[in-house]
Amino acid sequence: MATLYGRWRRRHADVMRMMVRRILFLLPLLLFVTLGVFALAAVSPYDPIDAYLGGLAGELTANQLGQLSATLNLNLPWYSAWWQWMSDLFHGELGTSRVYHQSVVQVIADRLPWTLLLSAVGLVISVLIAFLAGVWAGRHPAGAIDRLLSALATTLQATPPFVLALAALSIFALTLNWVPTGGLTYPGEPVTLRSTFDHLLVPGIVLGITQTPWLIMSFRESIFEALTSDAVRGARVRGIPPRMIVLRHILPVALPPFVALVGARLSELVVGSVLVEAIFAWPGLGSALVSSAQSLDFPLLTFLTVAITVLILLGNLLADIVFVILDPRVDADA
Image (tube, rainbow, N blue to C red):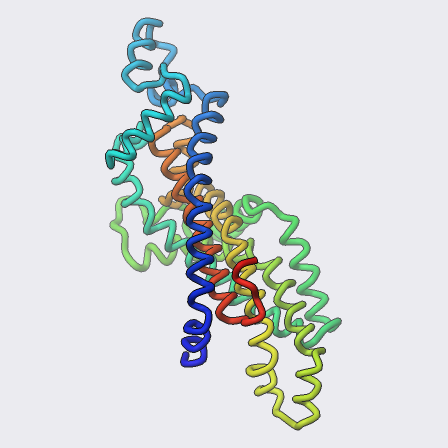
């Protein structure tokens, strides 16, 4: 800890400049993201009125549909709807979700904790698997386990997350009946720690596994390069124990790129979380994002898109900060 604090004190000015530069980049990016949501929604094949009415739009007259469209502000051009949303946002009004018939703030408050829980579990599982597998494969290159891990990583990387999720659901929930098929708790029962664990286990493992291939292969290469470096060869010649070589010479060199890659993969984690939540009916923001996109629920869809963009960029920034602190060779202004 003292070493990390010392590195932070030496590089805090570089880190602060990097943070300011990223934040200045974030503001116009978010503006274009919101514009993009409304522009793409304008050409979407979904009918927001039909979704709002639960598929009963055909039972209304043209006059009734026009009145409802005006009430929901669906008769505005997309740029006018965007400007109205921005105006409400500046006044602290996020609007009401047409899908959930709740304020956007309430939808976020109800679902954000469950998305954070699932994402955190998936991230911990992926990092733990990648760390252990990468260290082993890097220290035993071309071995049986190394070849097996490479084959598995290649296969997993080529497999879409929803395929893994459907396979896990089919095997462990429908065939073996070991875990529930989805949701957060059992029908008619309150949410408890046990029910949450039962329903979170398979989605968390699936989400974690989808993120491991690149992490394993990258960390494996970093470990192998550190093992073959002159510093490690010199340490072996001096008779330093293998455990100390790993802790003092290999991991300090291999960890910074690994941390940076974890941050760079956060976007994939978010995408995987959306798909996993939808398949396992997990009550998080991912399933809400899918529902709001299908119904063109502009207040909820736009805010969720912006929030996910912010989370990804902040996660990348945090990973880069840790990378800069851990590795003094990195130029924070690059």
